[in-house]
Length: 306
Image: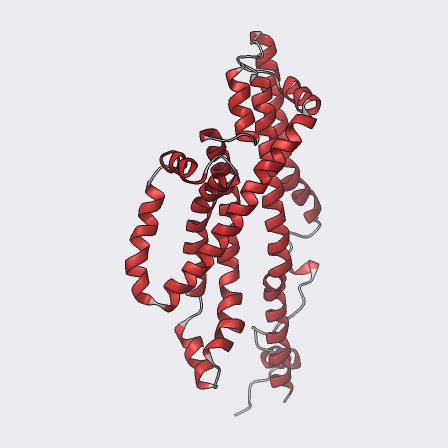
């Protein structure tokens, strides 16, 4: 019997496994051929600003058509002009609010990370402390802020304490989840290879927990702005929250909105700073997929050549 003939091209195809890494060519996906990712990227980046601009234009038109006075609802153009005119007044108050947020954020992050480590390494604390942590978040901040003003006075500390109380909860929860992100099999293998607990913590648990920790930190940054503002509403001598209350009492609603704009800029500044730090620290996360794919392809090619 004659053996079936096999073409050399088919032999070469069978020798190369389907999972071997290959560089992606533009002709491999006919549906995407000829399309450039640049317009879609520009559209994603421009669309939020375009939507905001349209909302501001609609706001301006409604105010002018309805003839609403400034003490009811000022137009965006009026708010911007007041913001620029009162910038020497807004900057000292913004500096005071930024100091309160920074101190509260630092205290909340350090307290949250410490508590997350304690809960992770002392399991009995989870059942003892977790209900208290959750119950503390059920209490309205407005109920705690007056007590902190009575205990700590009208300075920086009560506002920083309110911000810290709000921040530490997402940092703690995300920190514990991040520390538990490493599977038990990985830890068992490392221990079998002779790795100490300190080495496992430094080289495995900390990198694995950083994405969750930064997620909690970004939530905490936004909430810290709210906490500091609420503390200033209850009792303060300076700050953007204090300026909002004083302006509202004088029916300077345009100055209230200017203070809100300044507070928004402070929050965006802090959030952007956290994002920059996250990108620098977690640079390996963006490169992990391509690097892992490249290493796997190299390994397969070496084994197949042997």
